[in-house]
Length: 87
Ligand SMILES: N=c1c2ncn([C@@H]3O[C@H](COP(=O)(O)OP(=O)(O)OP(=O)(O)O)[C@@H](O)[C@H]3O)c2ncn1[C@@H]1O[C@H](COP(=O)(O)O)[C@@H](O)[C@H]1O
Image (tube, protein in one colour):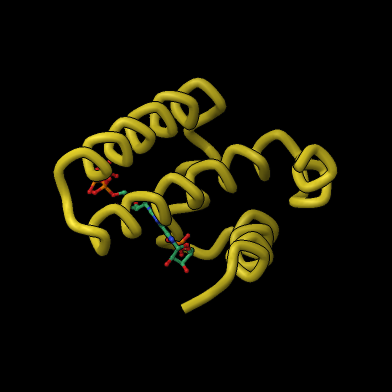
């Protein structure tokens, strides 16, 4: 288990070190347009899970949406602090 901030640190390291086989590296290389579509897809899965799936499935879908939002943040050079200041 990891927190939002711990995942962000891990993904930032992936972006910097670009280890072979990293899905995050491939995702970053796919570009903002592709990442945007992935975020829409994952958001839709969250919606469907909230309507039709048990809590555990919903939690998993939300975790995947958070992952893709973090990938977009890193792609665009945003940090959690940039987001938190709007909360
Ligand atoms: N938390 C995640 C995470 N959440 C979601 N995903 C990706 O998002 C996809 C979502 O799954 P779906 O079932 O919705 O989609 P799918 O159809 O199975 O997958 P696609 O064919 O669309 O890629 C997963 O297949 C992963 O590619 C994640 N990929 C990686 N992480 C974590 O990120 C860290 C770095 O990972 P790597 O860069 O791969 O080393 C590790 O701690 C991982 O656990």
